[in-house]
Image 1 (cartoon, rainbow, N blue to C red):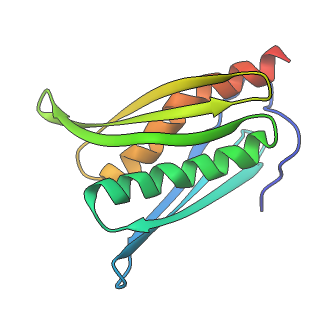
Image 2 (spheres, one colour):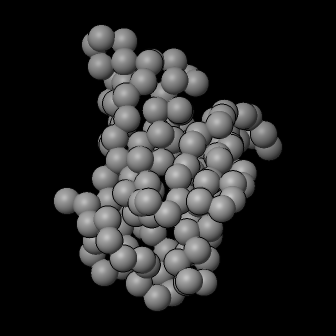
Length: 142
């Protein structure tokens, strides 16, 4: 299902196409995300974690990181440094901190997403918000 070759179609950013999150009877959780370019290419990422507020957010964030690495492989590698849901301004904001590495440099990215009903999905979208500009700039500058 993933096509790990080529860059972004000109002028486009990755789209958040599908997200699935489930809590398993074993006390673990599983997240699956599908990202896509406008030309139809899809990139799937999956992750498992433990059921807890922090574990569920990290599991969702890691699923997006895995999909992003399929998009950019082997040019850019990502790592989730932290993810947290905070209550601010009468809403829940999910904030993620990521490391992005290339052969020649490393940088730190921060993304956020305002959510009320679905913090795991919010964590996934926060990762995409943190990385979309970097990936778009990386592909279009080359």
